Image 1: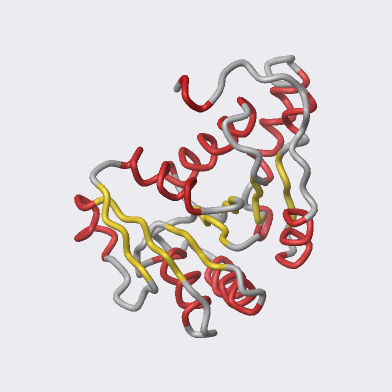
Image 2: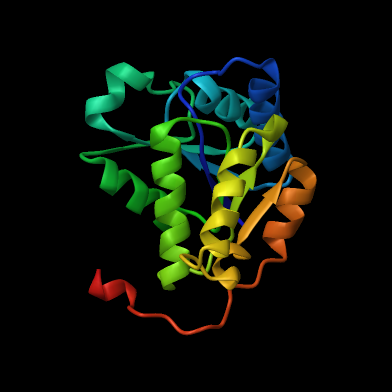
Length: 193
C-alpha cells in the first residue's frame, strides 16, 4: 500500500486517546512510507493525523471542498492540498488517490464517508481494504448494529467480513496489507454509477 485514506473527525472528542491514536497512526504511516490522504484540515483528529505524518517526514495529501476552507481550516504544511467543489468530488478524489481506507472516531461526515467506501467495496466498485481503528471501543455500538443487520438478514455475512476492525494500529495495518477482496458476484461496474 502506497497511500491510505483516513476519515476522521474535525473535532478532538472527549478523550485524549483519540488524538493520541490519530497522531500515532500518522507517525506509523510515515515510518512505513505510506502516504496519507485525508480531508485536508488542521483541526481535530484530521489535524492530529496530518501532524503525525508530517512531523515524521511523511507525505500528507489533503482534499478539501472550497466551501469548507474557512470552517475546517486547511492545513498549511501539507505535501499537497487539492481543492474541490463538492463533498462527492472530495470522496471520489480520495478514493482515486488511495489503496485503502481507515476510519477513526468522528461524527456524521466520518460515518457517511466510511459507509460510502464500504458500500462501494460491497458493490465491487473497488477492491481496497476498508478498516475501522476502534479506539477506546468508539465503534462498538456500530459493530453491534452491523451484526444485527446480518442477524436480521439485511446484510450478508460475507459483506460483514469485508470490514477490517482492530483497536491496535499495527495489527490493523497488517490486516489491511493482507486483505483479499471477496470474489463473489457484483451487480454493477464503476462506469454504470
